Image 1 (tube, one colour):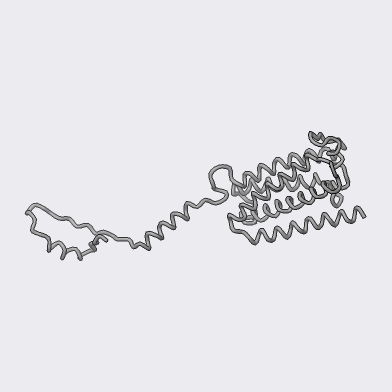
Image 2 (cartoon, rainbow, N blue to C red):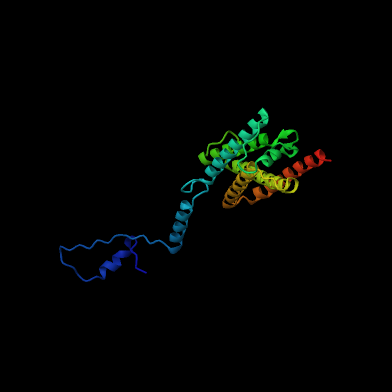
Length: 231
């Protein structure tokens, strides 16, 4: 390691140098030596500063994807809600008459509320949360952690309910195809995997456990309603 001159300790070293011409001057500058531990600490601090958060990564953020997917689901369920209110038949590009049978069946109502109304509220909530999280602008009393918790809970419950409805579709409507049901399930599963990725990036494992228990309660409630309705 190169020797370092500190304050007056460099005088003895200068005196041992050979004599120089009268007009030649030797300037000795103090040198500050950094220990290897300090350099490692500074490197680690710079690495922490450059580590991106889920909402600050380059490109389209996961929250932006949630807002976009939630918006598509909101439009779909709004269309189905309009058809429900006006007693109109849905345009089914896949499935034909069987699609309308599924949408107008008794399974399309839970606790007296049509499923499109529930889906419109759920997708609208996810879209609004995605926008708020992407912009980091929250109402009073809600921070980013609470926003992620609500987003994960909503998407987990929606994915669990969609999986249960797909089971109902395959067991009680054998051979029927419902393009709107399949689209809603695809959107719900996409929202779940995106919010789950954000959860693991932020290491909010306790949130995932709590929201999983909530999704189990949602499926049990729907199943309980169907058992009472079809006794």
